Image 1 (cartoon, each protein chain N blue to C red):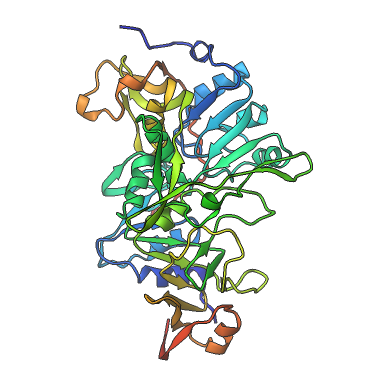
Image 2 (cartoon, one colour):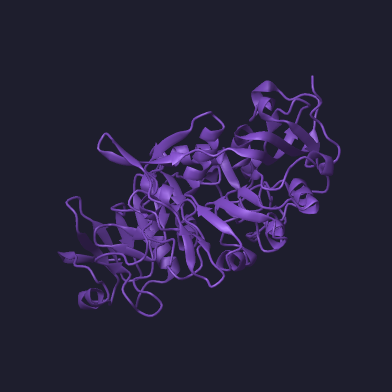
Length: 217
Length: 249
C-alpha cells in the first residue's frame, strides 16, 4: 500500500533537526508541522513576515492580522518575530533557512523542480517558490509519485517550466524516498512496505541507483 | 510643519490621476488599506499600473478595482485567488508582470533606497531568466506579449540576474498606528509589503487604526519622513481569506 498524505508528512518530519529554521510550502508540506518530533525545537518561517509560527488558533481567537503564506489564520509561539517581506526574503536569500519542504508537479533526475506553471492553463504566479529553491540550504520535495492520470512525475527532464535548477536534495513520494547524490544522480534510499522496486522503476522515468539492502519506510 | 492629517479619504486621493502607478500594501487581504482602495474605486481612477503582491479576491480588496476595469497592468508574484483576474487576463484587458516574491519585495525596497538595480539568484535557469512568461493576451486568447530575457553576471562562480527596481507615483499603505508626523507602527503579519512601499512612492498615503500623540521612537517601524498623508480609518472589515482553527481539547 502506498503512503497517505499524513504518512508522507510524517516521513518528512523525520528530516527535521533541533535548531532548524524551516519554511513549509502550501498544501501537504504544511501538514509536516503536525509531526514535529517532541524532543526537538524548530522554528517555522512564513515568507509573509513571521518567524516562530505556531498552530492554528482556537475557534474565536483568530486574528485577521496574523496569517501564514497560505493566507490561513495562525498563531505565533514564544520568541517569535514579525518583519517585512523584504527582510523575510533577505533571510531566505542569504541562507538563513535550513530547510524548505515544498510540493512539486515534476522533479528531474538532475534535481530540477517544476511547481508553478502549466502552459495553456491559467497563469497564477510563482509566489515565493523561486526565491525559496534558490535560497534555502536544503530542499525536500514531498509529492505523489505519479500524476492523477498515473504518469511519472520524476522525469529525465521536466517538461513544465522550472522553478529552479539542480536544487532538490530529497524527494519523498507515496512510494519511496530518493536522495540526490553529491556526485549527481538519483538514489532510492527507502521504499514503502509491499511496494517492489520493479513497480517504482515502472513509474519513474529517470534512472536511479539502489542500495543492496533497501530500508522500508 | 505641514499638516499631514486628512479627515476625508476622498480628499486624500483627489489628485491621483488616471494612468498612475500605484503600490498597494498587503499580503492577500491581510494588511490591505481598505478605505483607500475604496476611495480609488469611488473616484474611478482608470488605467492604473498596480504594484502589489496579489490582486485581492474576486469580491474583496483589490478585486473591486479589477471588477470596475480600473487596472491596466499589474506587477505581482501571485494572482491565483481571483476569477475576474483570469477572465480579464485571458481576454486581453489586463497586462501582468509576474515577479518572484522576494525579488518583488527587494525591487520595492531598493526602489525606496535610491538603488536603480540589483542582482539576485532567484529565477536563474527559469523563464524569469530566459523570458517567455505570458504578459498579455489578445481577444482570441493568443499570447501577444511575453517577458524578456534578463541580463546576468557571475559573482564568485554563481550566476545572478539583474533586476531593476520599482518606484510609484502613489503608495497606499495600511499601518496600525501613526503620530502626526507619520511615524508608523504595524501589527503582526500585516506589515508585509506595507513598510517597504512607504519610501518607494512620490506620494505615500497611509491609513491607520489609531492616530496617537506620541510613539516611543524605539518602537517605530517606519519613519514619518516617507509619509505624506495620514488618515484614521473606521470600522475595519479585515476579511479573512482562509479561516483555519483548531478545537479546544
